[in-house]
Each structure stands twice: as C-alpha cells, then as structure tokens.
Length: 304
Image (cartoon, rainbow, N blue to C red; front, side, top):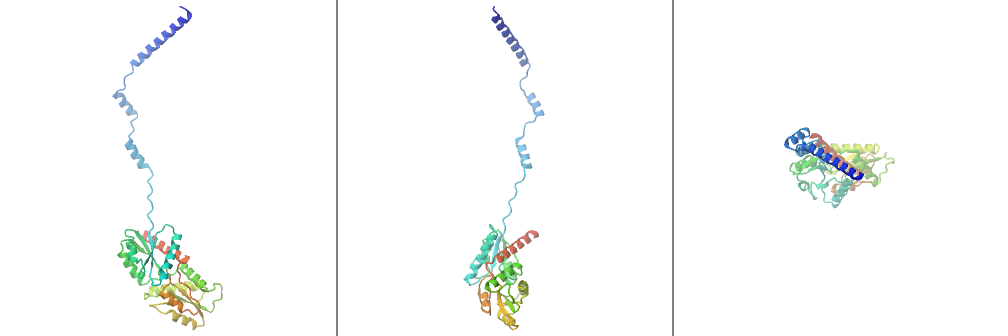
C-alpha cells in the first residue's frame, strides 16, 4: 500500500470511531415526554394570552372622554312688526358667531315674529340651551314669560340675565350717540341726554334703567342723563326732554333699544336735536351677549 492509501485508511477509521461515539451518546438521550414538558413549564410557564391582554387593557391609559357640546345660545328678542327688527338681530347674531365659531346660535321671539320661543325650544328637545334675553332690563318677559317657556320646554334651558347695566352696553350707547353727531371731546356743559327705553311696571326694570343712565352719564363726563320710557312708566320721553330744556340744556336722545321698532321710532321723533340709532349689531353688544351666555352657563355648572 502506498502512502496516500494509508492516509485514507486512517481517516476512514477516525470517522468510524466518531460515528460510534456519537451513536452511544444519542442512545442515552430520552425522548421528549410529558414529564420533561411539565418540568419546563414549571421553570418557564406558558404565556396566558387572554390574561396578558386583560392586564394590558387595565394598565393602558384611558381614552379621554370628549367634552360635552356647549349649550345652544338662544337669543330671545321681543318681536316687532317692523321688518328691520328681525334683520337687525340676525346681523347681531352673525357677529356673535364670528366671535365664537362653532357655537350653535339661534334667534327666537316672545311674540310677533318667527320663530317663537316655544317653537325654537321644541327644535332643541333633549338638548341643552341658554336663553339670553335681548332686553335691557328685567320685566314681565324676563321674570314670567321666559321661566314659563323653559318649564314647558322639552329642552334643558337656563335663563341668562338681560343685557342690563354693563360697560359694554354703555360703550355701544356712546358710539351710537357719536354716530348721530355727539362730539366726544367737545364742551357739553350745556347739554343733556334722555335715555329712551321701552319701560315696564316692574320696579326692578326701572331701577336697572337708572343704573344704565348713571353709567352713561359718567362715561359722558358728567352730562346729566335722564331715563325715560316709551310706555308703562314715567317720565315719558317728551316729558324728560321738556324737563332738561327747561334748565336750558340742549337735549340728545340715546336710543336704549336693541333693534328698530315702534318705540324706538317714536322716541327718536321727539328729539329736539340728535337721536341715536338702536344698538343693533354693535360689536360691543355682541360681546355682552356672549358674556351673559357664559355667566349663565358657568352658574349652572357650579350649581351642579
């Protein structure tokens, strides 16, 4: 045998010995049985997928609850046969929508114009609403008519305060006077103003109108401002004008009405000098309307 042949023989013999040893070791390995699997499960238990999913859900942060929608703002006007009244209030509510995009803002009327308040509330059945009176002072409508409407309403409705004595209202009154010809920086020592409003038999209404007149007088630098009424209370607008003229004063009429109508037209007709337009869609009035809405909404949330 040559040298290469002996090398091959040695290699073959080595492989035979390795195979024999490997076979002996494999013969000692036990098949995978239940006892071995049980031991492995005790060391490393199998994963319980449903239980693990439950634990994950329990520890995961809760999905935030979306905030409840804001109550619908229902602006409640008195109503008028003057076609300019409804158009004016619609423009006012357009300004409110510009200030609060996304807020549901609707117009309703106590009488004479559609939609009437009862119908507007019926459309909001099951919803939340805040009624904002487009009235300048508390009176029969605010004290009696609005609560009666909400009591019979299928909607959950709260009532805001009337627009009333507020710096924003005074801002609108002054601007309307300036538009009519009042000079804000002029000498008004010999002038006087009659604050013309609708009037009411309720003493609370007259007290609120007097507060508005006092604020307006302060804003005008101490000019005398006399509250007067188109109906149901004294003094009337003509009587107040005559009283100021008797003292030698030049008299302007400030129209304390939210929209044109019979009373506003009559009051302006008595003016011996200038008469301002109703407050209408003045930006300050839109802000005041939202202010009353938010106050009523906050008051209800605190009460809960």
